Amino acid sequence: MSALAYLDHNATSPLRPAAFDAMVEALRAGGNPSSVHTAGRKARAIVDRARREVASLVGARATETIFTSGGTEANNLALAGTGRRRVLVSAIEHDSVRQAVPQAEILPVDGDGVLDLAALERALAAPAEPALVSVMLANNETGVLQPLAEIVRLAQAAGALVHCDAVQGAGKVPVDFRGLGVDYLSLSAHKLGGPTGVGALVVRNGAPFSTDRRGGGQESNRRAGTENVSGIAGFGAAASEAASGLDVSGFRDRLELALVQIAAGANVFGARASRIGNTTCISMPGVPAETQVMALDLAGVCISAGAACSSGKVQRSPVLEAMGVPAAEAACAIRISLGWNTEAADIERLIAAWQDLYIRVNKSDISHTHRRARAA
Image 1 (cartoon, one colour):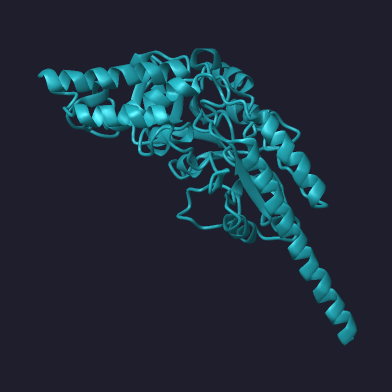
Image 2: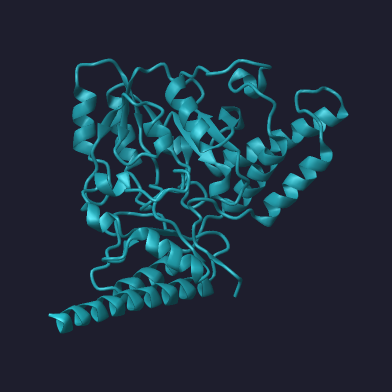
């Protein structure tokens, strides 16, 4: 067993060996992909190959794929680049979507975290200018998958464009850009075993798009700035390996069954909805999320309390709030996310550590109750 059971892949998935090797090769090659000499052409070839690999992962064309600094930039580019002033987003979107368009109209979700399609249809029917609809493929906290086919159907009928944040879904479930029918798709390398600091925005050929920056004309004048060649190479290699998918739902089912048996009243959020197979969002009644995170960390298990994009802070989950989860219960929710190198031993280590914490907390509560009774 390794020193750590790393079960926080939705925050960052460890770098795949193939991605590491591709990055080292690119760093050794050097060169600027915009240069026309031998070294520059070699760097360009590395970028072009990676672009094909990333595009292939999601069934897109290489010409539709723009490399970015990550999923956040991809989301911002998409939301700012369509020219649509009216934007509709689901209540469970990532902060990089919600904060990119503070004036966006928020669409509700049901108790399982699935977009309310009737609410979307009503919003699209409003007598207003054509909209942009932004809905993620898979939620980063619960793993719940959104009904993209129906969302696209309703949007297209109303003349709306559709952006999909597929950062958490790509490499975990099959993603077909053409089949989904969306206009824009965001990706991030480090969620599927690539390096941090690189992502991509896929823009359907013919979809309106205006860049937010000017410079040397890189990325076909769609994203200025010298390309991160080594990061892009690692992204491409990780995308190639992730194309086979992520088969860890058996591990997830094992841990969920065990945890709900250990803790009376434990709740797996979004369990009734369709989910990606690597994510569990579960509460330990009466035990704050930060206590669980720290206790499990001391036991050599890495998990998180919701999204890991808030400067390391543990705060109330807007996703669970949108799902109608009571604040006290949401405060006891943690996220467990599996990945490409998860092993059965990691799951058993988590189960044992979680059980130990639950027993210790409840023994402490019982002892405290007895002391109070005797004092009375």
